[in-house]
Image 1 (cartoon, helix red, strand yellow):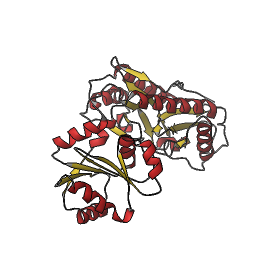
Image 2 (cartoon, rainbow, N blue to C red):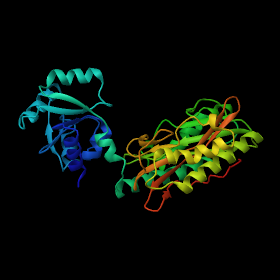
Image 3 (cartoon, rainbow, N blue to C red):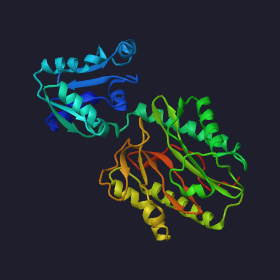
Image 4 (tube, one colour):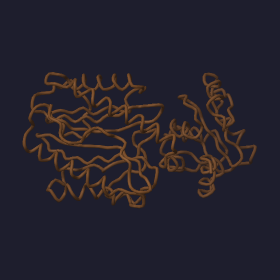
Amino acid sequence: MSQLQKVRVALQKQQAEALIITNDQNRRYLTGFTGSAGTVVITQTQAMLLVDFRYIEQAMKQSRAFEVRQIDRAHLYDTIQEILDTESIQTVGFEQQHVSYYTYQLIASKLTATLKPLSNIVEDLRMIKTPKEIELIKKAAWISDEAFQHILTFIEPGVSEIAIANELEAHMRKNGATGAAFDMIIASGKRSALPHGVATDKIVEQGDMLTLDFGAYYQGYRSDMTRTIAVGEPPEKLKEIYQIVYDSLQHALMHMAAGITGKEADSYSRDYITSKGYGEHYGHGSGHGIGLDIHENIFMSTVCEDLLEENMVLTVEPGIYIADLGGVRIEDDVVITKDGIEIITHSPKELIIL
């Protein structure tokens, strides 16, 4: 069954006759169109990609499974109404987590059909990756691994976090990335206790722990890897914490498999860290899906009842963060397989002291 057919089945289950898609990544996933603007309309018999004159040639080449129609942006909803009228459609779904209240009001004022808020119609399909998608994510992970090896030769006391971030991105671009997968986290010294400590002009100092959370953006797909290293000999307490996080990650990787819940997967690292007395310092989920977006379903946490399934691509990222001391996070990307997992980030995880 094609992805388009799966959307139509999902619409039937949700009792919606059509779906309007405006989210960039959902549009790209279904149509293959990589442009930055366009609207998808799917009914049980029609699949339309509506673009303005800037994108018509590109869309015609990339979206062969969809009927591509050039529209005047000022009359977008008039065109959508015409499409709906051909099937006398009365109920139209929209992506409620991606549509602002302003846009909702605009659509409601332009269309005669009843609008029905829908969640995760396309996102649920995106959780299970195709072989092609997995290969692209693996390539992004390889680029990240190469960049990590390079950055170890660049980091030294006196260099700034911003300089490290810029060097990482430049090296990833040299290896084929179109950029960083997200606003990378480069946090040194006491700042390593900030789980989302994006790079600043802080200078790396002797004895700092340095957290590097970054990824490559490659042909639309993303990797997401974290390594924490030491620049010179770190405090003994942080070395102890590093070993706990490392062991918790290894424990999780050994037990993850298709068929378990996200809550159970989360517990493998969390319970270990809690047993060592640091549970209150591990405040985020243990991982999430990656793909076209850096954060995709599922989100492994203490409340996640979704099941891990074969060909999901997930991060696994335990961490401990101590205010006014520092923190440690280690993160791998994995593919869920029939027999367990395949780890696709290969950079060393043992503590590196530069």
